[in-house]
Amino acid sequence: MKKLRALFLVNHDWFFVSHRLALGEALRDAGFDVGVAALRTGAHEVIEKAGLRFHPLPFDPGGRNPILEVRTLAAIIDLYRRERPSLVHQVTIKPVLYGSLAARALQIPAVVNAVSGLGYVFIERPEDNSSHRALRSVVQLIYRIALAYPRAYTIFQNPDDLATFQHAGMIRPAQARLIRGSGVDTHRFRATPLPPGPPLIVLPARMLWDKGIQEFVDAARLVRRRIPEARFALVGSAYTQNPAGIPEATLAAWHARGEVEWWGHRTDMPSVLAQAHLVV
Image (tube, rainbow, N blue to C red; front, top):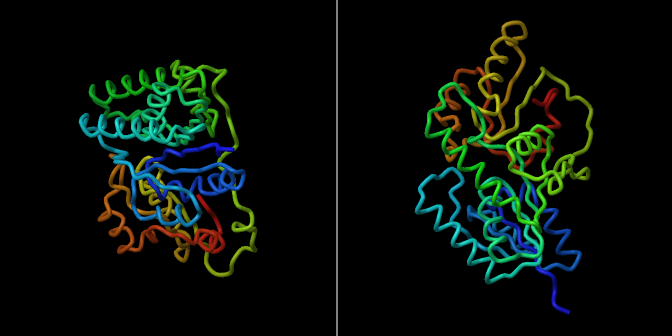
């Protein structure tokens, strides 16, 4: 009997490794032929080592060049036409939008979309201009078209995102599901006693202003006036592909002045969390 074919569509290969690798392995163990399509940044080797097929795609998560975006959509359509998956699982904004359009055009049997956050376009700011508001309107329209595919379901991880989509008419209630999150591997992440020494407060995230990084730094300044020995650490890489990305020079300057520590990207998060007294 021919294996059922499942295909993951995500923006970066590292994102799949950090957020969906266990799910891909579970589908593999259940007898699926599993593929992953994403921008290749080096983490694809982990994907292939797990026995999953990798398909490089020309994703630019923060890009707005119409020519390049059409090229990405065409590449996804071509991939779906060649692979003919029984199931596609599309995660984050552009994969959900472009993948859903491709799945609808090719009548893919089953589509599961995952909205892990609203993203830069939907965050309202005082400095928003007419072009940003116009972009938001276009994205909302594409969502309405893409998510209305009758064979698609969309999962959300917090009620506010779900409410935003429903209020704007971007999703039909019957095609939406609210789940508790991506899950935690309790074999890797175990409860540990509080460590000795001065308090260490960590914020693990991509280094985006929208994540509350500035507020964390401001809080560190206030706390350390009263508790000089307290340590505050930012754990995550600079993310220049997002307009809300914090310049690496700013992160390095905070670190150099001793306001907060910037640890950068870490792959040993169980160890990082075990050192912390408080996680933000």
